[in-house]
Length: 588
Image 1 (cartoon, rainbow, N blue to C red):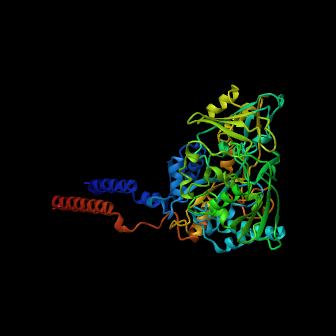
Image 2: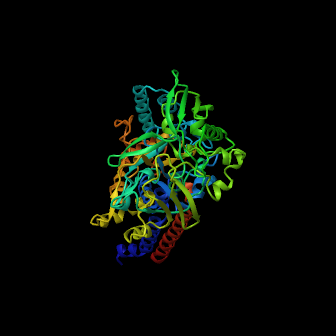
Image 3: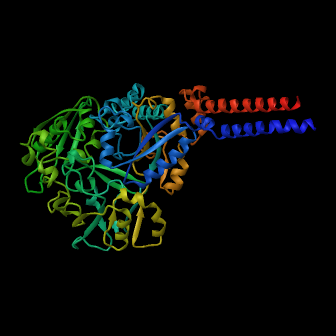
C-alpha cells in the first residue's frame, strides 16, 4: 500500500475545511469594519429650492469620504433652515440645530457696514448675523479697530490683519465670490444685479422717450415676506423702489462695478470735531406718497424705533453698535449721537433697512406691534421713494407706479410689475417670449447652463460681474468637533474649489481668499488661500486627533468570527483525530 496516498486521503478533508474557514474569514466584515467606519459624521443643510447647493454638497460628500468623514445631506425649506441657523443655542444637527450650511452673504458695496454684525462675537443672534457663533478675540479687535477710525490708512492696516487672521482661524470655508449674470431685455439699461430694483430711478429703455408710457416686468421667485423695510430680510426688490433712506446707492458703472453714495432725503452733513456726532441737513419740499410733508420728525421717529429692541428691526444690531441716540434741532435738521467713531455711517444710512417711515401714519403704534401691523402684512405705509404702491395680488404680482412728486422728478419707467415666477427656466422662457423684461439675479444664477445659448440673441442681454458678496461653507463653531480649528482647516483643504467654480458654476465665480470683494478698498490680496489638498487635510485632522484608517478594532468586537474559528478548529481537530484513529485500527 502507498503510504503517501493514504496520508493524502486522511488530510484531504482537513485541507478542505481549512479552505472553507479561510474563505469565510476573508469575506467576513473584519477589514470592512476597520476601513468603512467613519471617523465622524457631519450633516450639511441645503435649501431644497437650490439645485446648485445640492451639487456643491454632493461634491463635498465625495471628497470628505476620502478622509473618512461621513457627510449627510439634509434638504430643508428655506424658512425652516433659517430657523435652525439662528436658534439661540445653535446645537448640532442631532440636537435640533446644524453642523454645516452653504450660505451667501451680500455686502453693501461701499463699506464694511455689516461686518461687525456678521463676524464678531457681538453679532451673535439675536443681535446680529454671526450664526456660526465664531468667537475670536484677536479677530474681533482687528475688525473693531478698522471700524473705529476715520483714518483710511489705519483702517486698511487693521482690515489686512483681520483678513489674514480670518483665514488662519476660519469660522467658515470661503468658496467663491459670485459673478452674477443679469438677464434682461437688451433695450433695458442701468439695471443692476447687485442693486436689483434699488436704482430703478436710473433705469431707461432704449428707443423710448420720457413721454412714452414704459412698463418693466421683473420676475421674482415669490412674494415678499414683509412690507415694512425695517424688517427687511427679503423682499428687497419689492420694497426698495417705494422707500427712501437718508442717502441712496447710485450705479456709476456695471463693468467694472462702481457705486457711489448720493444724498437722498438728506441734503448735506458734517461730523463733529471728535467724530462722535453727525449733523444731517434734510431736503426740503419732499412729500410722502399720500401728500403729507416730510420733516425731521419722521427721521427721529424712524431711528428711535430702530434703536428700540422691542421693535425687532433687522438693522438693530448694526445700528445700535454705533448710534446712541438721535434728536431734532429743527424741522429739517437732525443730530445722530455716536457711541464711537463710525467711518461707515453714511454707507449704513443708505441701506434699505434704515429707510425713513412716516410718523403721521405709524407714530402712535407701539413699537412691539409694528411687525404684525397691517402695514407689514397687507399694504405698505406710504413712502417717499420714486415708486408708490398700487396693488398686490399674492402669489401673482405686485404693481408699483412712478411717483409724480418724487424730488428727483418722475422716473423714466412709469410702471414696475414684480411678477412671481418661481421656476427660473419658466422665467427664462418668459423673457425669450418678451412676456417679461428682466429676471431677478437670484434666478439668473441658476440659469448659467442656459447662458451660452443666449449669446447669439440680440434681443436679450447678459450683463454683470463680481458682485459684493461671498459664498461660503459655514461651520457651527459650537459643535463639539467643529470647535477644533484644525478640523475646520482640514475641511477647508478638502473642498474641490476648481470643480465647483469651473464645472458647477461654469466659470461664473472666482475663488475667494477673503470675505472682502477683490475690488474694495482694504482688500488683502496676500491673505492665505486654501487649495484642494487632501494630504494637508489629513495632516490637520491628525493634529486634531483624528486618524484614518482607524486603528484596528479590538478583538472583542469580533465574537461572530471567533466563534466561527472555534467551530472550524473543533471540526478539523475531530476529523484529524477520527481519521488517524481509523488508520491505526486498520494497520493493526
